[in-house]
Length: 80
Image: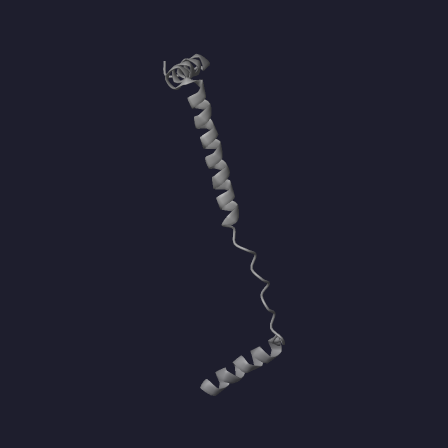
């Protein structure tokens, strides 16, 4: 009890075939397949175009470590 075996699925399949008929089940599966294809197509259309590369600055700033250390020391001396 509690487990679902292959026989349970076969019985459910037979009942579904009796209720809906063979044509209705295949039509339903075809509609599901069309829906999946439409969804995938919609997802492919929604992908944004790749952004253009960012422009690089014309002249990058070069920071010298010695200059920044001296500037920090000079500011400390003026505050004291």
